[in-house]
Every structure is written in C-alpha cells, then in structure tokens.
Length: 154
Image (tube, rainbow, N blue to C red; front, side):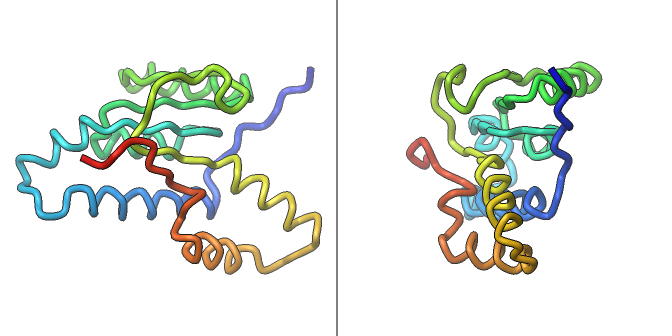
C-alpha cells in the first residue's frame, strides 16, 4: 500500500483555529482568571481528521484537558503519536475510519475531513475563489460543520 501524505495545516486549519479561540473566549467570558484553567481543563476536544495534529496540539497548549486525535491515515497517527511523546503530552491518538473506533462524548469537535471534501469538490468544479467561499460558507452557516458542541455547555 502506498503511503498517504500527512495533511499539513492550510488556510482551513487556521480558520478553524480562529473559530476555536472564539468559542473558548465565549465559554470563559465573565469568568475570573483563576477559573479559566479549570474550565479549559474540564473541556474535551475530538480532532477528527487530525492530519499533522496542529489543531489538537494548539488546543492542548491552551489548556483543553482532553484531546483525542483521529485519522484514517496510519502515517498521520504515527506522526501525532511521536509528537505527543516528544512533548510529554498525554492525549489519545486513534486510527479510525471516521467514528468507528471513537467512543465517549466531547465538548468540541474539529471536522477537518468535511473541509477537505469541500476542497476536492470545488477543485473538481474548477472553482478558483475557494478561500472567499470557505469563509463565507463557514461563517454564513455559523460554523455548524466546523465546530459542533456535542455536550451541553456548562
């Protein structure tokens, strides 16, 4: 079997990162500085289609307590596991075809695979204004397919 390349951060990655930061800001709005670490450490994030793991790592650096990285690509899973070990971080990495090996509930979910699918579709249609379209579509849908809340807000 031919090795698949690891999905590296791209414009969609950084848009989702901006969205997560906005979501976190909303979650901790009105809270004291002392409360913020406890709030974040109680959050969990599922990075579905983790690729290089950029989003999950950044979320972990912000203080998200539980990050689960999932990818169908064995190269990505191996790469993310190596990064976690080198940084002494204790999060989970799962080789899975979407949700087949994922269990539990999460506060936040990155669905990078939907953005990748959208890119492929738009590319096949030879649509060349993708960054503008992504931004408009994502914000216009209130990020419903970028960040999903799977658990009730606390």
